[in-house]
Image 1 (cartoon, rainbow, N blue to C red):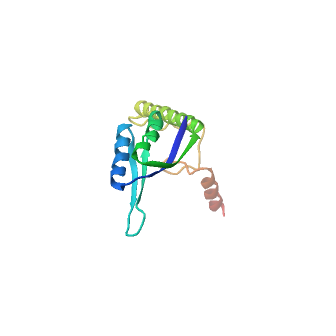
Image 2 (image 1 turned 90 degrees about the vertical axis):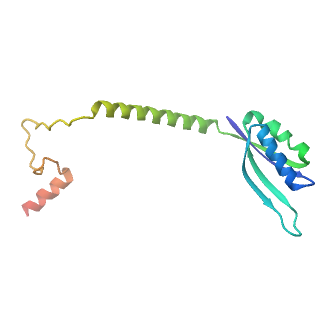
Image 3 (image 1 turned 180 degrees about the vertical axis):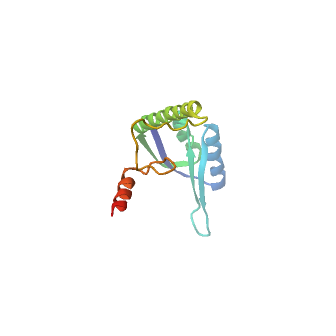
Length: 149
């Protein structure tokens, strides 16, 4: 999978109609404008920067559609191969969906009334507190060391 990015500079006679033409071009090719910045000021060169997200199948058409708007002074097209990232993200999403299904199934089959704890025959553990909850190995050792001193 390849993502192409283009940067183009178009010189126009009038800024506002050109911005409207770029927006119209975006709508015509199924794209959308994500960012627009217009710089104006007294004694300054008026300019606009417009960021357009274009479907890959209409990329060349969108780039060619800039020529009638004004004089195309420069165009730079870059391509970035994101195939490995796409496969990686797809695999992660599939694994997450499988895990979600397993957890939902587990919750559906394992929820309900808890069963009472059964004592293990022949094993009395002095490191259990009165409520039947284990202190854990490190805590039990620390507790027994304190009681012998």
